[in-house]
Length: 304
Length: 260
Ligand SMILES: Nc1ncnc2c1ncn2[C@@H]1O[C@H](COP(=O)(O)OP(=O)(O)OP(=O)(O)O)[C@@H](O)[C@H]1O
Ligand SMILES: [Mg+2]
Image (cartoon, rainbow over all chains, first blue to last red; front, side):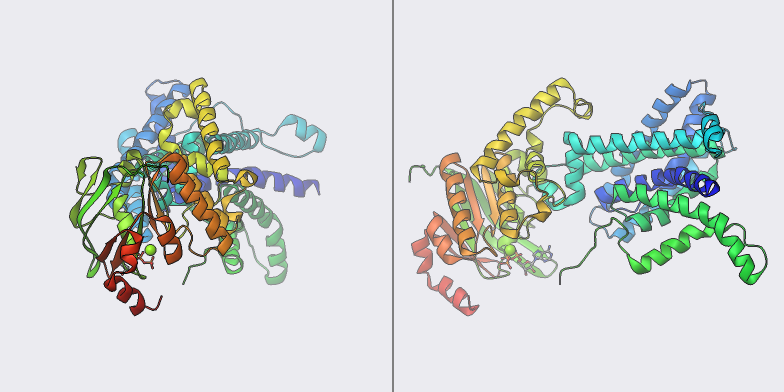
């Protein structure tokens, strides 16, 4: 039982990192109806920018601020040079544009900062927390716990921002009804630029956590693929959905990895490792059959 | 009536609007005077909503000119229209369904808020004071339209008739000079219609707001409007005070022809 909880907690904590990436998708999708394929590339670019700035001699805090500035500029540029040109295009055309954007960013990032794999040290060690190890005999990584704390703080901060500020209210308004938002004079362009900047900030946080765990490298762009099952589970338009979806995916893939192979081996014989690599996608597919709008997504019924 | 109808403030000249081959509006001209209630009527598909959409810049007409308070424009854009003092409601309610009534109204005042983005993000002194001042203004509108009891309710949960009223409230929260109302009473029962009529008249009378309104219910239109424009197949077929319009043979034909 203890072991079960250890796996579960480890899974939940790593799931929060998926939530973070999914959150970036949800923000942009809600506000502009664009499924931003470039979110993974943004995570990579943000992490590289931090490392790059530190290599040029900036301390961590300064590198973070600079990277945030870079991501904000990227967001504004995306709105100005890509989205604004594509107003009123179909969602699929916008999606294609973000694929192009992701290639652009994946090319730009190593051009600016070089392409070798680099470690990123944010000063948090990845070791079992002694207290938990002693009292409960469970291995819970201090880094995972830190990452979870950061994610929770980020989500809470965003929630307050959306709920209580004028800009947050305008953002919610745009996400809710474009037509009405326009009629009360909310400039969609500003809001889109802002959302992309916020998504850039979320990418920065995700990039820091993923990068310091796995090294800053091109593979970070694939975090976007991990977010996909999370989005299908949680719904593309729901912030709580992204969080809960990430937790479910994280926990279930770790549990599946531990508990399913022995069963399969018993039945079929042979070796069934690596389940966690595909389990989330299968889970998402099954979920699509039952509840295509996701756990928290809005059910969309077309008027006829 | 106590209010004084003033000079022409909005003048639409030779507006034509096409969607591909569909001629939604053909060479339409009419004007709106300050403080009046101006109705646009006509059978389904006549181009009434398109006309409102041209006025506040949702659609750009291929031809024509819009003159608002002496300022000539080829077309509006929605932001400029909102800044100039236009506020509107839509035929298929366009509220922020996930937000509370209060938040919808506060959003309606978005353009009136001046403190900058950073101050707001940090909930800084001036921003906080400003928010409270706007809150007071919004509460006045809530009072005016009798919706105290639903202030904190998410709009999506309200019944249809109340949603229509909240949409009017959001438009009023912007303290508009001209209100554009697209079928504010459509789909309401008799009692709700009476309430809505009274609110529209009160807004016009007590706040002096100029109102352009689309409505199908002839009784209502003839009762509350000062002047009426009649559209049919995108063309103007009548314009004048209710009594004249009622007796205009072309108007009668248009309405009988489509079985209203
Ligand atoms: N966005 C659009 N794209 C294409 N055609 C449009 C568009 N909006 C309106 N039309 C067409 O323009 C014509 C006028 O439509 P409009 O909605 O203005 O009529 P209406 O008088 O408001 O009708 P109703 O009483 O049904 O609301 C119709 O033929 C309609 O199909
Ligand atoms: Mg209409």
